[in-house]
Amino acid sequence: MSFYGILILRVGLGIVFLYFGFNQIIEPKAWIDLVPSIFSNFVNLKVFIYLNGIFDLVIGICLILGLFIKIISLLGFIHLMSIFLFSLKFTPSGIRDLGLAFAILSLYFLGEDRFNIKNFLSKIKNEKQNFRSK
Image (cartoon, rainbow, N blue to C red):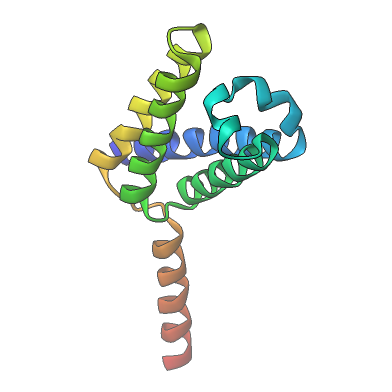
């Protein structure tokens, strides 16, 4: 039954990343105050937020579909830890992101589960081949 726990963790984290990704793309101005001021010296903050939103969306989609779990979980961990360390720190939102960072890191160690899009597509392909051979 532990495989259901991995699925729930993966999909739950995916929903969180999708939510924040969509939010950053729809309302980038609402996020500008959360970006450390040092970034304004290097990049347009609105563009930075759009790129961050796209990054969050990619992580969310990959988590929900179960794609590239090892690399996505490491990228998600690094991403959330950088937000914690450089932006939110020991605020309530920072502590939340710290907890999410370790939750996504656990997916790295748990690895891929059987409920991913690759297994699903493989199963469909096998069923088609079995149907054709009859």
